[in-house]
Length: 381
Image (cartoon, rainbow, N blue to C red; front, side):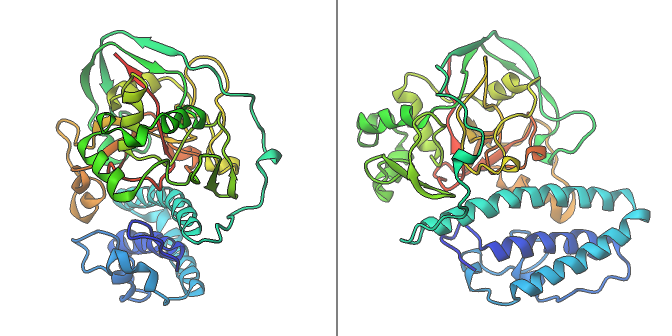
């Protein structure tokens, strides 16, 4: 039931909401004999679908002591049984809804972890989520030197095409002219970001966007969210640990990423630049599947860490692609209505399921967001 802030949700709510999604958008629409497990739960676990009906207030999800966790798990088993029974002879639209539901659930697998981490951090006990030591996992050598990959001006095809799942915001595929740019070979490390902090990065308004500087002042920011004062330790899924200077920095907002890039004589890549660079790369990196639950040092030659480790802020506002059309009905609210006031992130994180990611995937959050595993990749003209 822990809800550490309005933007986060209790773990039980995530479990219930993903169950609600399958009952609401699969069973209620395609099972003719469907009867609601408990129609009151439609209100409790609806996230933001106005077309579906009323919703329990998001900032107050932590008061939902009922249904109990056991009741939520029993509800999920009940929904799973009925969805599986429906699948063999179901129409294509129902299969599409089930597929969307599985990818929706993968998103919540990641949000579940980020919300748990913030909840544990919000207590003075700073309790660990796992006691599995990082030393028990593969540990690469020191961070690679940062190099730059050069790209000439070129027309490119952006967005999803062909078979395989994609969210509606990844479509339609379209052409864009991407000018010449250079992209950093890896993510910015804790050590590099620490130099920005030590150089007074959080005290220099000339480095910040106006809204970013206001956020710094209002929030008293002087380092990434989970860093302890002094920059020697940081909170993660293993509790308070010493900061590894060679792994990617994370839990920084768009404002912090933009200010760091300006301090470093660089900028953030646009999402078109990022996608052009990522095309042809396999989805390899550090993901939740690996059990590390922390960013990892870059290894290998050339461009690395395009997928996994930390979501990469881009300089692109989250807007519809040319000729975008949202899904029909309530599911059209899934992505389209958020295309204002948010920034695009690419690539995935160490909390992301590996199979959930692809080069066209568009994540998005408000510019002030810090509790996600979000990091920085630099670009230059």
